[in-house]
Length: 98
Image (tube, rainbow, N blue to C red):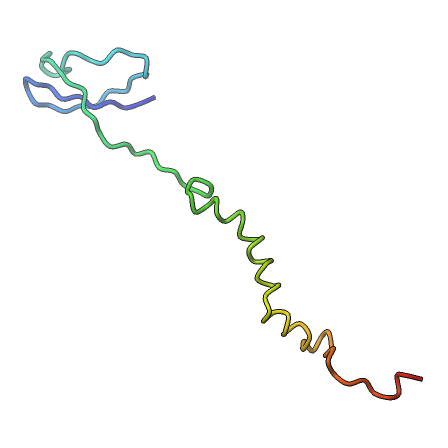
């Protein structure tokens, strides 16, 4: 339920009222029965967590971008010289070709 702020034009008192959106605005001050005006105030509404900001939507395409970086020429050079995979440019010994 929204919280609305009102200010009395007679006594200057500012007060809050919990009202439904469909309720009519208040017209009388609860302190002096003077005429009140509804104020525009800041909200305490905050968006927290992921998926609320433009930058969060860009993260979904990041895995595809990181996959394309592994296809870079530098990554291809390092792939052939990896000690786990063996060096594909190393000369073969004569013993294997019998």
